[in-house]
Image 1: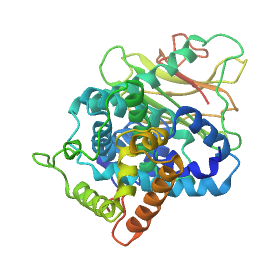
Image 2: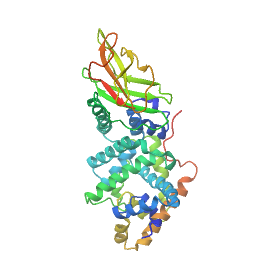
Image 3: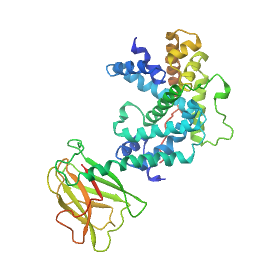
Image 4: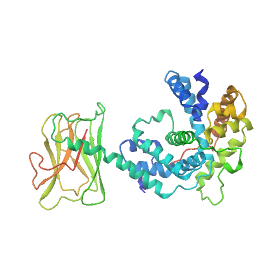
Length: 201
Length: 193
């Protein structure tokens, strides 16, 4: 079979599984086909716009967004359970560029999901952004932590929960875990509660 | 709906989705969900299956947004390709009798469907381009794309050699590309400013 002349059929999804696989193998070695496919694929997709599109049911949007949120929520607890273990499993951060850790955790006391983002700059300075976080209760404070792989947690700043962006003190080494706990006012030297958020960077 | 994202390009939204920004996924859905659903419905002819196909495609966008390479094509093409592939997989697996585009009933009626001006314009442009194709090429494109037939099935169904079917698909898409490349036939969503 000459895979070269299958580009149009592939763009239209008109190949069976074996043919498609053979074509994809060919594609990895043929610049000309890759270029042609990009063009024909775009044209084939124009056919999607030629059909009358009734509005999808409103539940579809909600269903997609709920499922998407649920998938991300599942990522965080794995890290959380490994809180005190040595040699934390961490995701590889893209080398020499900005590493971003993200997580969503469901607040126990409200329906609003918290959304956390940790951005680490090339210089190692990090900022935690959070939305949906309730203010710390009376006599308590949120405390951020940086946990280098295989090391104890290092305090990285206190915040009340009313702020949405928290700049961490010190720097975050590569692959360190960034976490947040609720601590007694004034903060702690080591975390005393289960993190409400943690992520590898 | 987070209208702060309305000014962003599709590609910027995919980049945000890759960083788990859910509002970016929502905005992509608001732009292409309707076209995606219309496409899935055309191929699958079943609302529930069409919803499933659209959901799976958008979750694939969510999961693999970080692997999207803008240099290889537009985000809208990527999204609708995912929807189409999913719909075609299902229609083949389910062995459902596929839409026969030669049957006028296969094309959903426009009556009673409220469309925004953008979608109507896109539809009219693509339909005009299709009308300019030789019948044999149009038939091959429509049966393959909307009917989910493989090239071998088309050869058998139309009683033509496989090489002829390949030529018709290639010729049809190439001609469509020329026709749509003419001014005023842009098919992607244009950010509002």
